Image (tube, rainbow over all chains, first blue to last red; front, side, top):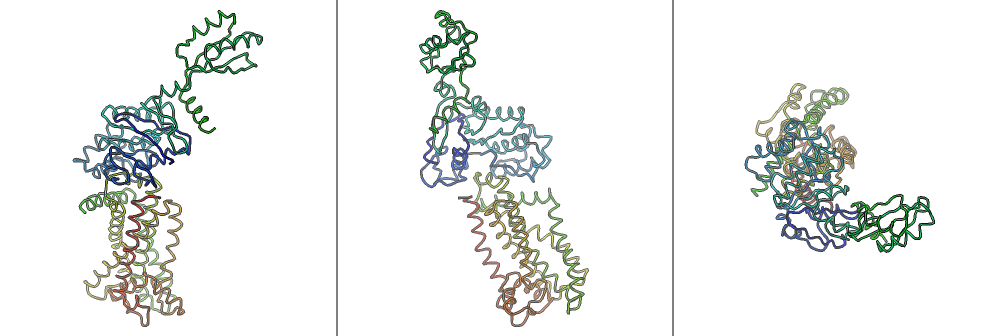
Length: 291
Length: 260
């Protein structure tokens, strides 16, 4: 960690994105008191990480590849154990309630080691929700899950934030961040490189415009028009007689693009404006960071 | 303190449930010493100068202590497994007592060991071993044995948290099999060359074994032995106190701090 500044609003989902080795897992391990920082400070749910780790632990819950339930115990035994450790009154009732909510009642009395990946992750999440945490850390919660299990996890996350829980989500699936996160922190080399909502980060990149003309002789003329419209530097694909450009102008729509080029006397074979995906954002921004 | 007791009891319950859910390992660790008693007792017992029945009486306390020393192996394996599977990390993010998790594991291990004494001692009685002294002294022998198990489990828990890998724990655990071979658990140390005898008698297993033989009345304290064996009860208590004083805080600290 080089100095990771991260402030997350209560009741929101903050997605932490970054290439492998960027420091995501280290950040989560620090914030969940699993690692002690050499220097610097952080407040988690208003408590100092170094001086009040107990208070931090009372406010958080962690689910992820690195924090797991006990495979030698059944699902029910696991939840009862964690309920007891959380001082829940009526641990058996609480366990039954969570098993039901996560669709695990049928498998409740089987050893957790016999569960499928999806069931296992659901049990992990259930164990984190014994008491509603102020902050829930989800470390790649849906890696390797089938779509049905993934939806259950996503549903649970939405319910939690509706109740006021703050969620810190690290994931490799950009679609997951796009669907769940209110804010994104792009982490690279142990520091936060960019923050913003998914829409803000996409606006940072701009949309990708591409046109295909009928004849190679028209490329220069077409590029001139495109340059005026987008203000970006056009790139040529001579094999396909295609020109691409980036635009940050949200008023540039497809009909307008076609009209302007038609008016300039450029016959088109194809035209498209593609809004950026978070993949584009991720690739572009990490590439920029690398240079 | 009440937090430690409450959380420790919950963790103790977890360990006992694990054993109940998965009795295979328990059965294996229980049949091992019985098999060794029958093999050593009859094979070595026929070859040694000591008469067979006398050797088997000599062997029962030795095997009890050698088996107790396996606390290093089981403690290490369970702790490493928890680290490897991420269970330790989850527990470390909970607002529970830092000592509760290793303490729960060590106490559970002692309880399981105590239960396992019953079948072994029954087989011992069947092959000719007897309690020759008072019942009180015999009870003292069993208490000392369990104290020794408690101590070795802490060594195991510390090493398991340190390695964090089931494979490494398995390999290192195999090495603990050698420890009783370098002691008076299976053979009288008096016949060994001087330097080897000294080495064997400074092995904590020898002091505890001699104390058990003395308390059960199976064999006299050997002449001219190193201090812990010559004063087996005091020697055993000091060894146990020393091991617990060193390894319990190390294990708890390791658990509380994690890998940094």
